[in-house]
Image (cartoon, rainbow, N blue to C red; front, top):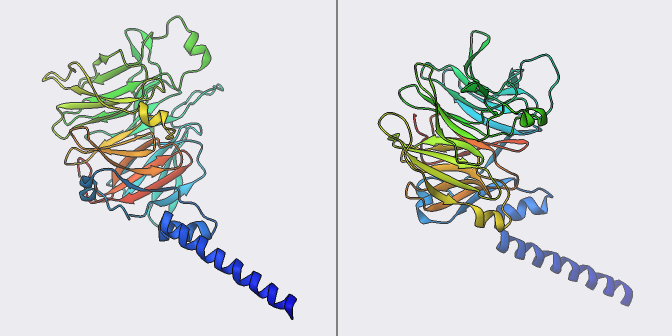
Length: 351
């Protein structure tokens, strides 16, 4: 009897301890987090508020959905309104995938960034994607080292060299309302051989392809220019720098002729990186009010036009890029092996 009573007491004590642990988890993590933790799951992403102004842009309780996974490095999402689908790159797989509601993922384009028959090392696929004013797909192609347009089953080269030298590896791009294409050109897609080539460009540039096809170098003093986006009035061009020694976002005034004035640091992410947040400044999009949704340390960081950090879609893995889709209020996110989305209260620029 004593032994049985002691065993029951121990069981009761264990149950009480378990209940207390659950209560502590619920208090510390929130009910949803506790439910996922108890079930052995772990959230990939959630919303963090840093400023009350975030509440007008996104609900802090908004669920971040996982739409697909298993990619090598997902990048460059773009919404295709006429087809009601999302396209995005898997850079190492040299593939553009398509996601459609209710149908999931399929291959849209392969090869997407390297079209030669010879084998090649390095990151070969497409990276940033965009639509031109006619709704045609534009691609930054790492392997072919060019900006190209996909039209009638063929890639048409828009820019692949500057002053007779091959471009490094175009990374991301944005289209101005007049049809000009602005793009960044870091070295991420270059092979070891191309980096040693004496004809290689000695800098990483930000360029413009004007509507008449002329290529103009706009910036040459950024070490790793990456994501790129315009303010709603197109008077500011934002450019991310994915250099771990100097991770930041720059803001450049856009002159009347489309060239750029002297840039200023819009936001310095080095403290975030030093604090251990995952990721580097990468792709970004702007909403209709001028707020910037920029992937970087911690996930998708949301800034007011004045540079105030409002909060973020916190993601456990490095975030690469994002794009608004559907009616403009849904934010799609490419992050490492995942494709994610979250509903917002705002709308992306152009919707």
